[in-house]
Image 1 (tube, rainbow over the protein chains, first blue to last red):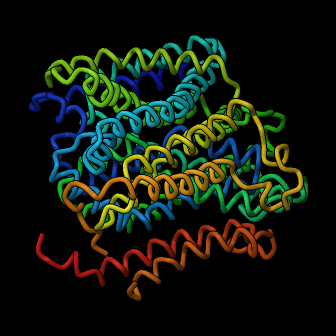
Image 2: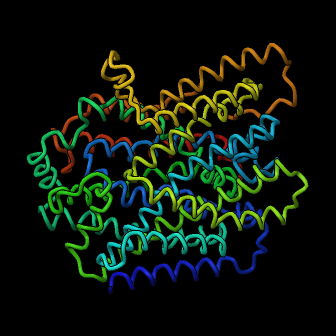
Image 3: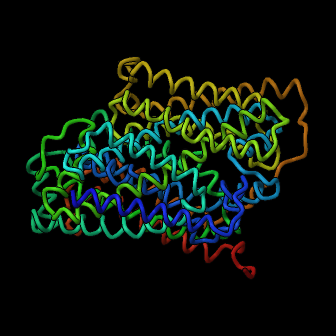
Length: 492
Length: 64
């Protein structure tokens, strides 16, 4: 019970911070969703880091280290790769967004391709991809509440309680609340993860080297990539896919708009890879759990961090860990909810009914928050995937937006609207087909060499996407000369 | 393509290539299995490389 009280206190502090952040700002749509475009390095850093260090890293990262071993290292890599790209990509996107007063990712496509229809398509892809992302935050919230209550609150009720808090929190605070809670969360998670990652290996094994040797002896090959399945070619394709998708999440794209100037991104690109090293400690905790609390199967691997904590520490510290965990779900969860609600209201509803006023869009967005939360709640109760698999599914979807986005930054218009739309549709359909049917490349094409069979299926969809994009662009270009003003150049 | 852009490719190649040639536990470095150590080193290198690029990049010179 002590543990649960500490968790509840953390949530109260977060809500109080959100209410405080709201003060002194008129909450119109631009304030609510992009903070009036006035955030400096630190806030943008926190918002972006807030999205990076989510339940996914906290419970999912340790869960994968526990359940899969070596393949979990991909989580450490894709962020760094994305930060390298962000150094050149984000300033260009930001400049364009600022000039055109854009609020969302869909606005970007609408403006660049001069096509509201493409904006609607992008919004739909975004909202669909965000659902598994939100589901994984809710799963995390549920696990934390139910584990810290020592099982006295059932998992189902934990998830429902978590969802209510999340939806209420978003409606009250908007993006400023997220930035402030992100500050609290990052401090707490840093402290907790470093303590766990250092203490657990020392306490149970006497050192890091000793721990890894013990694991290697007990489970040979566990710490490296297997020859089949999650092999090196799986690793490379997954890292690439996730890196391309990194900033394509509607909420990450939206966080770009909150910056005050473009240098913010270049500075952050330097610091964020180091910040990423916090993951190392998450892995340590997960690996320690391999031998200390063995036997958690499948998606229960996500509970390994909480189990080993409960087994090792006093209830009050379990509460602190749980509180940090709840914040890792609350911050990204609130951004995801806010983003999907804003997109549904502004980029889908308003395109259908252009006479809607800004105020109506703002109100509708707030009404949609609980609706989206309920949809995610439904899927949370109807799926058994691990946190990381859920995220990979979402990544496969958003990554389909990457090729047309990057090509739209070129000086001349290289892609036609039809080409971009066709590529995205084909990519998303392939991802959906793989996900729904559960098919694998091994099953579909057993004659392929092993490294190709192991490729992440999201990459297959991405390749098809680019091919279709190129073909349709060539066909439609012939019919119609380039129209519209030349778009902005990428300054490299 | 200037030199500093090639520089940015270094950690990326290290990570992606590392999946193939660094995929082993021996030798342990700083207590970490070699593959984990390699990936961590690449992450640190990313930060260093981007810091160097930031310094060299004329876009960051003009006053704030």
